[in-house]
Length: 191
Image (cartoon, rainbow, N blue to C red; front, top):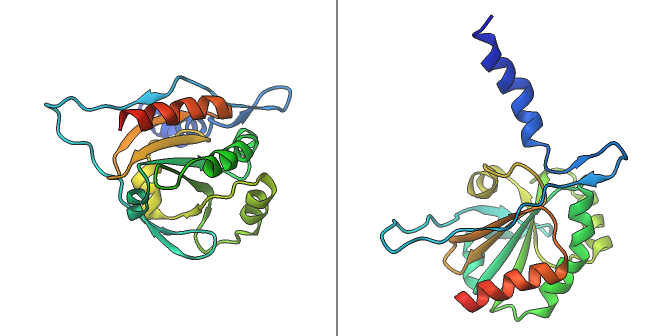
């Protein structure tokens, strides 16, 4: 029986923990854990950080690869889901941010974590239009999952990636536009 406990934990408890990022409290309102942004920096003696590498498609069916990072000094990759109210609430302000910066300096890319390539994407298209999130959104596939989502335990999760494809930091949870702007400006100034 003692050998079954790890199996039971792995099958029942672990998936519940991983899916708990965007949950509902007793009032039915969505809540998200909001720790401070995790910023990753490498000391000169450490090996260089791994570059994010993927291939996928956007909502229009256009191929997109990790080469997209080279188009801007800083890329904000926002991982969201169609069922996540905090994700949807912050998307209008993310759309505003995308429009406020020069594309050569900063860009935003959304990754829809619960809609696979080839699936019906009409709900995603509707939500993007409804929220005014006018920036590229990628549909999930194995390549994108392996590149960025293996350690994502809740949505929204946002990565900041430099022009070489190296992850500079990660933020779990939704933020106000002013907070995003502060993080973006700090990362751009450090480049």
